[in-house]
Each structure stands twice: as structure tokens, then as C-alpha cells.
Image (cartoon, rainbow over all chains, first blue to last red; front, side, top):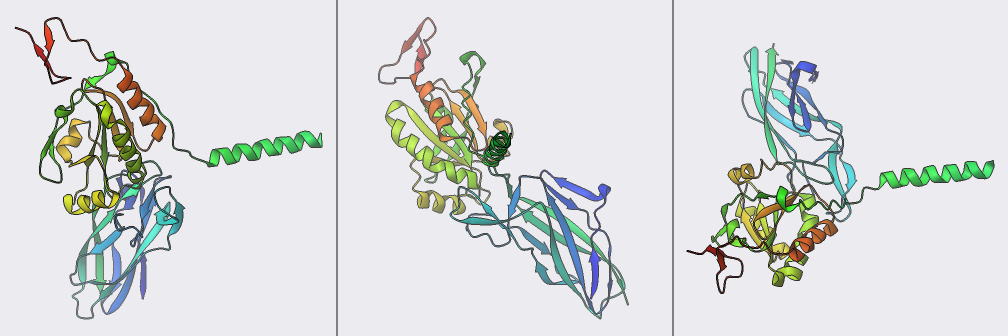
Length: 149
Length: 196
């Protein structure tokens, strides 16, 4: 398995109010393998986003999706949440905050033609702090995958 | 000396503990009448499809709350606003909730029913948000005086007592004296017509 890490460069940041999302850098992948891509995210201090499976049906989950194409998604792994005490939820609310990573494992078929494949994705999230919430946002992502034999 | 050190440590611990707590702030802030701006009017639909105009509430103190079903802090305030609606409804007061849910009534209606919300809820949109200076953070709550002017605006959760004090202050305030030549319309306590 080839492990690729999306480097965070100062010029590559797309700042969306409270969430810093790096512009994905090209990932090298060999045909017939699985490639793992990490998307590091950074939330402004004091803010959190819901997990991919919030316990309240009204809360908007964090969701990373990738369009199917020559390269397909095998698995998306969300990190272990932090438990956060909030007044509006009995018990503790699982959230993501600070720095965290979303991992996507892509299948690269053996039959794929070598070259550059752009995989389009979307990241949907909704951020809050203890006093207020911001509207849900959906951010378009493009992951360039450089396929070789 | 040891005793002083112990007290100093105790004082530090108390200070640290106090700083860890983050009670909901009481932020009473009614503007002076001369500084209040007219509230922009809007016409939005409620769950029954009826059009609700903010100007229909002129003569009442209105708590206008922008909220959404996915907003946790908004959820804390809803029971407070239900209390206000119940306690002050006979004193020319009304709560109007403007939901900013993108999914519309499909999301809002079950929530309103589940929480047994006893005040008017309408569905907001970007245009209405722009009228109020682009509402981006929820909850955002505006307290409007009887003459339809913005008396206070709170972005984010504030204490129930803040709203309570503001509402009471506005309810107790003397009504605006009509300009010379105006007459009160019988049966319509707050509407004013200019005399010929």
C-alpha cells in the first residue's frame, strides 16, 4: 500500500471561516494498488464540528465524499471523536476539534491508464462553538492522482 | 509564611476554576430610543402557508429569533422563548422564530412539533438574512420595540435574564406620543392615522 500525505503549504490553504482545509497536492499511485490519502483539517480554537455520526438526528454530520471515476473509494476513516460537554445535549457530545485527519483509501485498478486523474470530492461540515453555530458548508475538493505502472 | 503561601495557592486555584467556567453571559444592552433604527420588514410563510409580515406586529414588543434545527445553542433558548411567549402574551409581546434551515419545512416542522414551540415560526432565506446585515451566526436575536425599532441585537447565546430584562424594559417604556395632528384609531390600540 502506498501511503501519501497531503502536505499543507501556506499557499495551499483554503480558509473557510473557521476550518482550514489544505489544497490537496498530487498523490502518486501505482495501478493495481490501494493508495491512502490523509486530509488534515484544522479548526479555529473554540470551534468544533459534528462527527460523521452525530447522536442527534438534527445535527449535521461531517461528511467527506469522492466522486467515482477511474479511481474508486475503498474506505473513508474518520478519527476518534472527543467528548464535549454542551448544555443542549444530555451526556457528552462527540465532536472533532483542533487538528484532525480524514483518511481515504482509494482503489487504483490494474487496468487504469497511466497519467493524471483528478478525483473530485466534497467536504460538508457545520461548525459551532459553545455560544453559536455557523451555517453548514460544502467545500469542493480536487485530488490529483498521478498513476504509474 | 506557610499560611500565606497556602492562601495564595488556594486563591490561585479558585481563580483557575473560575476561569474554567463559562456561564452564559448576561449582556443587557437596550439602545437609547434616539439610537434605535427601524426594523426592516419582511413577509415570510409559516408552517400553514400563511404570510407573516413583521410590520403586522407593530405596537408589540417582538423577540425576533434567527435559529436552525441543527444549532445546539438555539436549542437551549427555545424553552426560554416559549416561557416568554406564555408569560408576556397578554402584554403586547410576541416571539417570532425565523428558521434558517436549508431543508425547509421538512426539517423544521417535525422539530417545531417535537419541541411544542408555542410561538410563530417562519422560514427564512438569504434575502431576509441580508436585510439584517447578513446573519451568519445562529442564534441571532433581535428585540424590537413597540414602534418597530431595533432595541437590541444579540449574536450567539446570551442569558435568559438578558432577554427578560430587555423585554420588561420595553414593555414598561411609555408608548411613543403621536405627532401633532395624529389620532388614535378606535379598536386598534397601536395604529395611528394622520388627521385631515
